[in-house]
Length: 133
Image 1 (tube, helix red, strand yellow):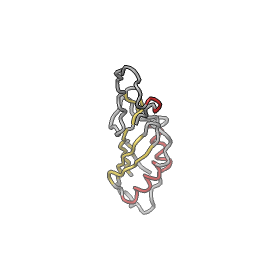
Image 2 (cartoon, helix red, strand yellow):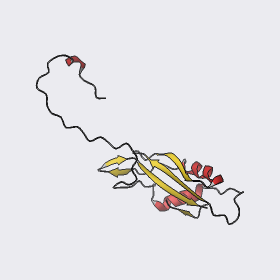
Image 3 (cartoon, one colour):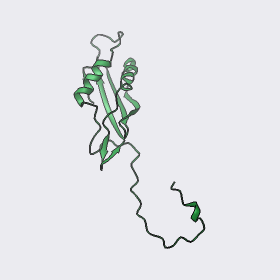
Image 4 (tube, rainbow, N blue to C red):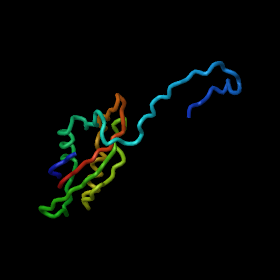
């Protein structure tokens, strides 16, 4: 059990080749951000907040029997919180050896998060997470 978690527009084909009248200038809409952000106006949140996240991790993580007594192991990972709150694209940034698989098993079980917001729109955000055993 860890002791700390930080946690192509289509045209009108009927009018093809026909004169349609004067052309109006149209403002292009701002292209939505598709690359993950590191920070947003409102960051994603685990349902119930940080305390609920810690409780979830403590409840579901199992420390392997073959972990040496008194050993200090850190697993750092990064995951994305999608615009609908889905967690995806897990990357282990610092391996904890035998604990990596256990950490990935548990984060894959997490419920949807409250998505982040930037300019009143939900955006994709990458979150780091550090677990110490």
